[in-house]
Length: 209
Image 1 (cartoon, rainbow, N blue to C red):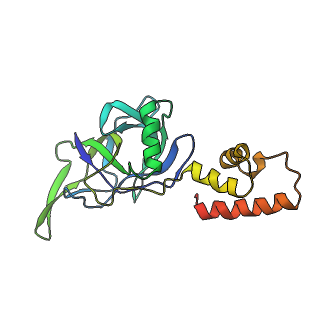
Image 2 (image 1 turned 45 degrees about the vertical axis):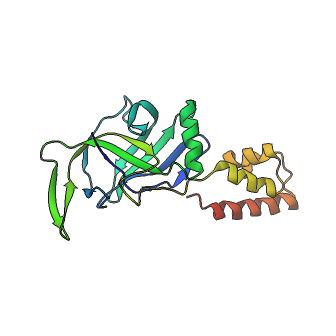
Image 3 (image 1 turned 180 degrees about the horizontal axis):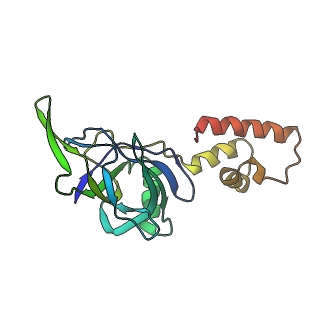
């Protein structure tokens, strides 16, 4: 099985271990001189419900979750769900939020005729035009210098900011998961309006899109 670490752009992670982003980016040359062309994953080995497996370090005996996926012009977009009920996955998730476990790597096979080579500035680059995707993995290091998990949002950081605005720990957790409407018992007075405005500004500061 070939392994290629491509740029990962995490758009959002949530307290339940779900995230969206790109597990591979097309037309990007890695340190191993590989390039994946758009739409190259012609065949994907999926779970029974049609999702791709997430593994730890390409070890299929240490699965971490699964993800819905699609290929667009930019790369392999995934909507992942980590299995936080598994202890090593919880540990990995904490390392992701801390910026320590910051790479993703795809594991794939190349069928006969699925790749060609071309000369780029005196160096041969493998052009992958067809591949069989088995999984993508959480890894600490990879072949691609751009292969970093970016913008992993820590729910704890958000809760801490909410506590600073005057909310209790219970209220901060409710707001982080359910928004201002989750505090239905508040009376809607001036203090509530002010806190709602501050919450809105804080949410924009975190840029959760």
